[in-house]
Length: 129
Image 1 (cartoon, rainbow, N blue to C red):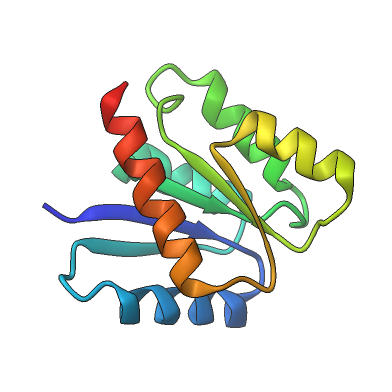
Image 2: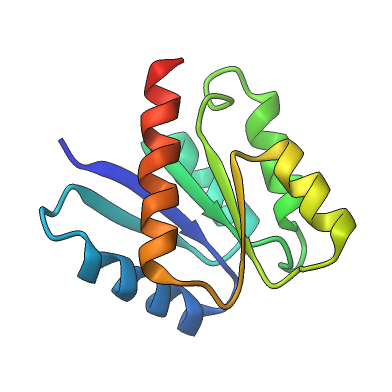
């Protein structure tokens, strides 16, 4: 069964690029890549499809990644979904906060192979729980 990876970013070009890069590396077609262009859209998808992992941007209008992550972690049905922040925020405070509230924190620009390894590791670790 395919693992559902939800990628959330308000930049549609970046969303397309991330999905394209990861699909290229998913040689066995083990993953289905879902997309959301806002925090609100992310929560709707999580409710309908409960992804196996969320790649979440922090800097988004209306509802930022911090708010989305908080809403997910507050919900008993969703709190076990691993979140990886994929963001341009590189300041120490953001990295420390993000590392505490997510399973991983990846800065843009990113290396697709490294990101895929982190995704696989996070999914494996969440299965053990």
